[in-house]
Length: 125
Image (cartoon, rainbow, N blue to C red):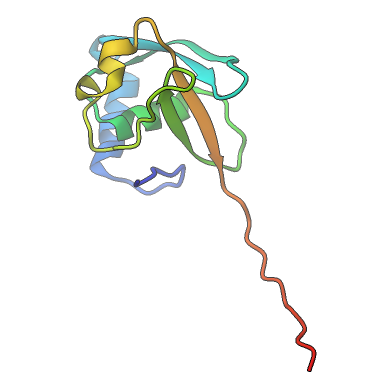
C-alpha cells in the first residue's frame, strides 16, 4: 500500500486535491468523517468529487480534519469495522464509498510518525 504523506512533495494527485478543495461545485459526493475507535465526529459533511482517486480522497480528509502534528497520513475505512480503502489508485466511484457514503461514515485512523531509536547492546564475552 502506498501511503500519501503530509510532506511537501508535489504530484499530479496533489494538483487534483487542490482543485477538489478549491471548487465547491465539483463536490458531488459527501460523507460524514468519524474517528476510528471513538466514533467522534471529525467532519459533518466532507465534500469531494466522486471521480477522484482514493489517494486524493485520503489527502482531502487529511487536509480537512484536525490531526496531531506527528500524523503521517490517515487510513480510511467505510464504516466502523468496514472495508479499508487501501488502493490509492482506485477511483472513489469504483470503491465501496460510492455505494455506502450516504448511510455509512468514512472512518479515519491516524498513522503517526514515530521516531526510531538506535539502541546499543553491550556484548558480554
